[in-house]
Length: 273
Ligand SMILES: [Zn+2]
Ligand SMILES: [Zn+2]
Image (cartoon, rainbow, N blue to C red; front, side):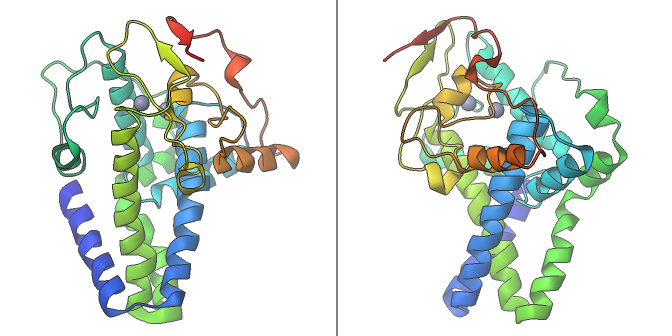
């Protein structure tokens, strides 16, 4: 299903670029990619729902998570499980090549985007009740693919089917491919300011991609301080997701925003530079 979902959108997205190139299409693609990835995926799903790095009102949390679902990756519970599963694997003494992105470029791509991995004795993850019992999140989880429909309808009315392929299919395909690529490279090599002794998999920063990934490229920092709402910690590490959270805090919509110092350091954390 996941494989078919990605392949279909990738195909339609490529068709749009080749047979219906337009500036309007490009603008719609860039605009909705930026909103869904920054406010939705990076801030709503990752920094808020998964890591609880700040507090906000329930309606805003739901809105940001909905935008995150619109990226087209999974529902909220699916995202939490995928993240926790990778995290758990990377904390074990030996981490298999799938969750550590240890395979080569295309093999890892094939594994991550087209395969489902089943463990013989998976660890038990309990998603906190507040999220697991929330009717809205349960509904999103069940119908996450259908969340594209309102956008499909709007784009169709404005610019016909071509615009739908630009703003929905191409965006989903590029987002999924980009997400996988950042995950792949951020666990292999790059800039490293900290190391966590005793773990087989380390996170790395990918300099130069701050604006493009909305700060998710500072993955070495994220491994060092997973509770921190801020990912770009050093001067020059642009982090649009963090700017967005600062904006929310400035108008009173984000509270208790956590930084690297907000919690005790991880066991084995060692500064390299
Ligand atoms: Zn990681
Ligand atoms: Zn994380």
